Amino acid sequence: MHQTHSQSETAAPIPASLAGKPGQRFSDARRLHHPEAGSGARNPRAVELADALREIAGCGNGATEMDLSVLGFSVGEIIAHLPEAKLILAETFVREIAPTGDRLQQIIEKAIASAAHIMPKTAGLDEASEDAAGVEWRRYCAARAAFRLDPWWSQSERVLVLLKGFLRRLPLLEREANRVIYAVAAEQKATVHRGEHA
Image 1 (cartoon, helix red, strand yellow):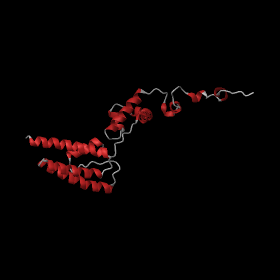
Image 2 (cartoon, one colour):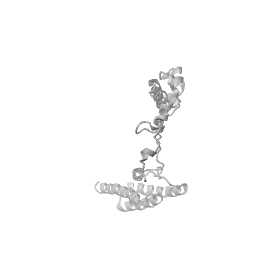
Image 3 (tube, rainbow, N blue to C red):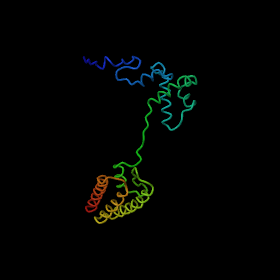
Image 4 (spheres, helix red, strand yellow):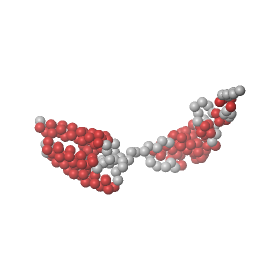
């Protein structure tokens, strides 16, 4: 006779020490027993010390004993609570990584401003491509300067052709390049329209 056993009957039970609370990770349970974690409840003075360290670091400097004593911490408090304060800082640390290139809106803003020394750059642009794009960017900026002095349709078309040449040098999708071109074209159209009625 063939008998089937359910998995709960055949599988060994999970030890209570590994089970933890529902929704809790095993590493969270282990962290509470870490020697620097204390009893689980944070010492209020260690929290204040961590905030002071964070504030001083936000000013761009490392915290010294003198900085902390000016904020009201005694040397004994610094020695006693520094390990816990460092642990608090490590748990709340968030690194902000700036993008390596301009986003589309920034490219549009720079294209409209058209300053020769502020060229839009995108991620993935190597040095040789950046040099070639720089030549095209300066041509575009010179054309924009001429357009500002003499805002006529022919100047506007020349600017857009040079902008297309510059944008071809950047690793952009066609729809992204078109958005930049349309934004500059709209700005120039408004400029020409204002010039006709001035």
